[in-house]
Image 1 (cartoon, rainbow, N blue to C red):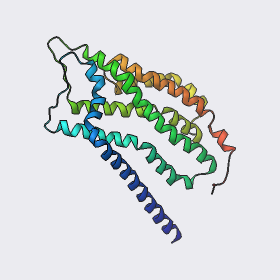
Image 2 (image 1 turned 180 degrees about the vertical axis):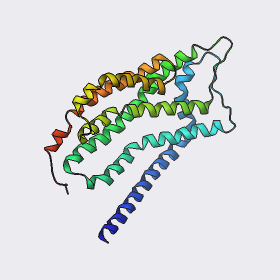
Image 3 (image 1 turned 90 degrees about the vertical axis):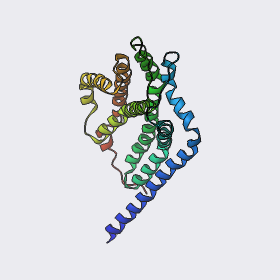
Image 4 (image 1 turned 120 degrees about the vertical axis):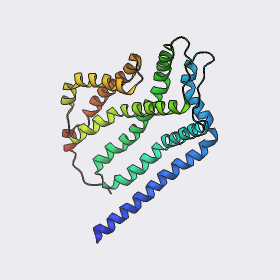
Length: 248
């Protein structure tokens, strides 16, 4: 009975925290809704700057001019709420962690959100201007480059997600070393394969040009090296000597 009661208590807490996360996203969305058109224009600026004179974006669906900006605004609201969402995740799992685990997980949750934002910023400020300028310059003579706003939104959100996840490589490496799944020595031995894999991933996730592939592959390789350096601090032998009881 006690275990069943405890499970129900945890489920109630989980439901409450999930509702709080959802409400936070909706509140941010409501606040940003009046600026939905401006937010979309900001997102479209890298492509608009690369388009030839007289060219513009188009809407092929009747509802696209209305739905695309609000869809983007909802995604932006979720991205803004990520720190608050991570806080609730941390607050839910923290009571079950040991003291040394709390010292690791809390910074990782904070760092993961920063790295995700950094990945999206890198895509927007570095990749998009270069990639769009390169791609639009190869339009055949007589062809007007006009991108559909819904297709553009789906494309950039995919790139944002890909770069945000790619920038989480140091977090993944630290967790792998900390749990003992792998070691820093093994990761260093696999470096040549990782370099090749980074360029393969860059080829699959970015626009079909070499510049975009390199702009994703090189940061992934760099972040892999950063993860190895930090992972050496949180390797399994280091944590094995720090057995402690749960903090109150």
